[in-house]
Length: 357
Image (tube, rainbow, N blue to C red; front, side, top):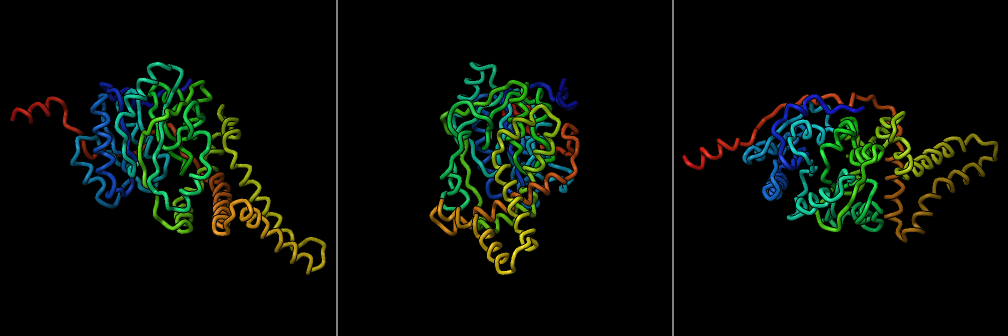
């Protein structure tokens, strides 16, 4: 039986909702994220926790002007997508936890709708809404908009990408909020761990948050994600699921695994084709045809060479990242993350003292 983290019992008393904002160098966006979060919890009762992954800009300085808890990762070498939510959860007191990125803004009214839904459906462990993407000109986000997956539609879903409101009880049954080893796919990992224990996930037909995605050129973004380890997430997810009850859900839900396995097979064919017992000209022509095949197939499907090229190149980055992630060493995901509390919100009696001063 999974036990809650040892620090969970120390955070008393509980409040209704904790909005955990995970951030790294978000000085341009952090004030809006905090202000909309404070407005949201003011209507339902709760707190805001900023989980900072050792920002080098003014993120922490700006955040410390607000009545929120600011906690920071001690070791910047541990930065990854899975660390932020778990770091915030360590310091959160809410019976319900909402995860928000530092470049997002909460939408008025979502928490009330989500809490009412969870109260009426005790079998549901987490509920999300519609994430409104404001960057409509980036190639990556245009591609996402053209193929919105089923888990972004209202109703029961298999994951809550883009943030959701989770029951603390469900998180503790699943062992932890997010796997500190993951450089991506942390929301899917939480989803499969919850679902393997019988919890359901639901997406409401209402807006939950807004987001303005990266303005970085698409190929520069791929290079950045390689350097940051983001592309390793799928391999890290699979490695962490080996031997666990949720492994079958990972294999069933990650259909891109088949695609990236096909890319690896394509590379293997290209690497071995020059050694096939064929005339040199036939080998050269075969190599050229095999190398061009994915690009031609995607260009026919998308009716665009630029979109086709980006798709194939991104597959190659992801396939290489899959292998790299499978080989990365792992830390114990339930172990406390080394952190420091940089700022605490004033206590109620301090607020009253200031009011009457």
